[in-house]
Picture 1 (tube, rainbow, N blue to C red):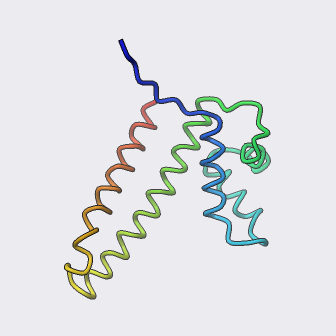
Picture 2 (cartoon, rainbow, N blue to C red; picture 1 turned 180 degrees about the vertical axis):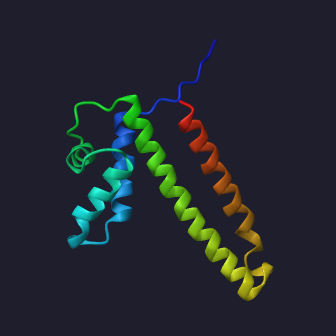
Length: 123
């Protein structure tokens, strides 16, 4: 009998936290704002979030893992929405042929992120 376990490790939480922070941070003067914003999205204090990114946090519980995963999926969803808007603008300007080859791929990706969010919420 085989069983698939969809585990969320502390290492994965750290990696996602770092990705979200790097995406939000615009440069040297922006670290504190980016840290506070992403920490808030994950339901954490800025200090706890910084410790998580550095791997200094003692543990990552299931609830925190879920919040980090959902925050990351929200970021992905936002980026896909921006891409969809760009595709729509190109389509309106240059016609459907200009974006026909990848428009469906963008829509499929959006559906995959929505499905991943539903799975993450259901845990």
